[in-house]
Image (cartoon, rainbow, N blue to C red):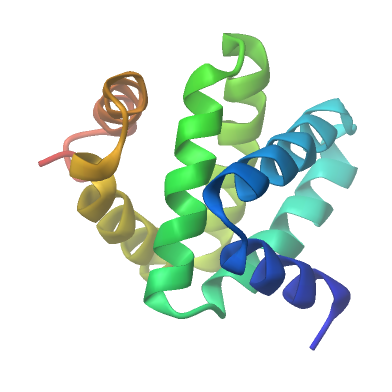
Length: 130
């Protein structure tokens, strides 16, 4: 197991508050990187997240969406654009898996995060929003 896989697995098992704090600092770090470094680091993290169980993945997605909803627009868009580029490179199955997970989480999100996700899905096009 790589260091990133171990970190992601540990992150998924933490209580919500600790997970939120650690993930927020990780996302802040990603936002400060140059594009190439951000893509490399985020791709490694996405790959590790894809290897988790459905429940662990849902937990991390929920936390990530809540954090992103509270980020300033410029920082949030930088992270989302890099994330979507990486997912597109992984192919339609990766995109579909992530969309299914996000759709399944909508009811569990705070109103602010739900609104952010619905706007994001609408922006991504009709094939992603139901």
